[in-house]
Image (cartoon, rainbow, N blue to C red; front, side, top):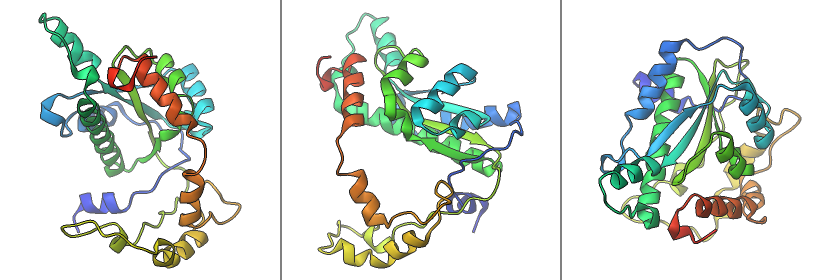
Amino acid sequence: MNEMLKTILNHRSVRSFSEKPVDGQAVQEIIEAGRHGATSTGQQAFSIIQVTDKAIRSEIAQITGQPYSAEAPLWFLIVLDLHRNAEIVHEQGAYFTGDGDFYTFIQSCMDGAIAAQNMALAAESMGLGICYFGSIFMNIKRIAELVQLPPLTFPLTGLGMGYPKGAFMKKPRLPENVQVFTNQYKVFPDYLDVLKEYDSIMHEYIDSRHPEGPVPPFTVQVMHRNTGPAVQGEEALSLLKKQGFSWAGNE
């Protein structure tokens, strides 16, 4: 197994960082890894914001409810960015239509996701630990305000990095047979039964965020995550309208 595969398969989320700084060359290499990911039709419709301001970092940590967000030596916000390309079109006297094209939005999300994962892999290959912060969606509008996002941009995820403090367990993954198929999607009539053994493994798994006891079985986690009110989704849609994505409707 080559070193890249080892890095990928050894991934674990790190939620406690040492105070050891990350040198500038490593930071630049991580950013370059993000910038050189594949992008749809070469549009490069994403931006990377490195957040170093302590006041902003502190408020982001409060929004996410994850104090270790402020402790990570490096913190990046990955942003879907159609603003830049819209301005390029306008400066040539043409009318930008990407704001009303949901396909363009999805492809731009992919651009940003690929950039984020490239950055994560680059960091992990250097011995750093990483943690994605999807919890920015707890108050996505305030996140956009904090970094002064212009129209036709949207925060996708936060990404914290630094040297790990302590050991972190690797979370078990779904069995391959329920997630990887050949030629066509396979539907199981009894997912609770098929995932019984995996549920048992997850029930025993002690997550570093929950040292006080075992986390719930996977199927219970899925139920909890997908049966509550869609508050964060509604707020995200509201921000998309505010940011000028016309396919989302009017604010």
